[in-house]
Image (cartoon, rainbow over all chains, first blue to last red):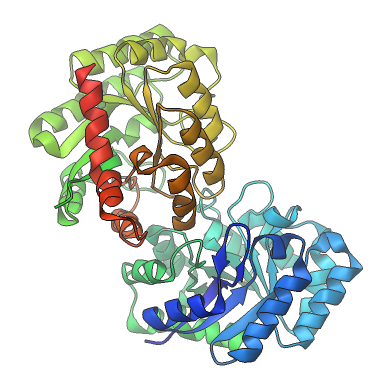
Length: 244
Length: 257
């Protein structure tokens, strides 16, 4: 099966360090056809333009393997919107929000101009969740209800301690997909049962986790062939593919 | 062949909210199928029902199970951490009379702050007996890794284990704490592979123990956690220590005390 991984990192940061060649080798070894990539660490937090240039370059060089997300810290105000606009017009497919790393509460209106920019471009908002105070699933649901025509992705399904919240939050907002990296098998099974396979996206969070390990994890989840195809590939193609 | 010890596991005989209980034999079989020879188990029931009679019953049940299955299970006692002298007496009974090996504390579920002086009688027993104490960690406000490290500093005769290596968000502080305190160890369950890779050069392979939280939640999580160690890319010697060597050494040392 050719897999689409909805959450991979690219860049050499302070913590996460992965080059395009390393990521492509990991994807080839694990049977991943396409990865949705975003930047890392300081490039998500403050040095947005440098990180975005690297993502744009990778997508430009390997358009069949990568789709890219921009990072723009909303504390930069109108400059952040300009930077996001530059990236979306340059071919990136969405915005990566890491409110814990970037220093705000996920539902804070400080983010709204960036989400509005995504709405105007038909782009997706991917949000890290699971870190208390700044990145909780219900904060994402609040944001998603404010922008019902923007697609959102709940990164990690609230992992670690907000796993109870992931499905109830997703039930509040139909425009939220759940991304499977880090979260345990039991909660993926619960989400499948309560939300249906159409709402789930496989993601690895490579190199925070390991791409091959996260694919192995998904083999431990009981799914019909149709469900598996949706979660591992076709949902992502529908969500991101039309925007590539 | 590496001896594998899962140093973070549970026995759960009662439902917890919507989570169903699991037969201990089925959980032990799940460990055995994965090549795990021994599981360090505490009662999940006792962690969520803070009544002295429940703790007493759970410790009795665990001791019976330990007696029945032998070396496959090492039992860790649970007590009411806010129970003062009565809790200390129950810990003493669990170790001296029942033959349990150590203590499990879950300051978030139980709940109690690591800095609450009410814990003193309990840790006097744990120190005198040089016990291994396994903590849930990684969850503010009562179980941040550095809060547990404060107890490790205060009670150096105990061996303390951070049961989740700081989870996803506090992994950095877990590694810092384990580096600083000789009697503090890191468990691998629920923290990320990158966090473990970053912790290893800080704390060394002697200070890390494989654990899965098996018996609580879905048994497939045990499998995932073992695969996480295998995917780490460890040197064989380090992998052997983390998968079982360190745990075996720690219990041996506690037994010698």
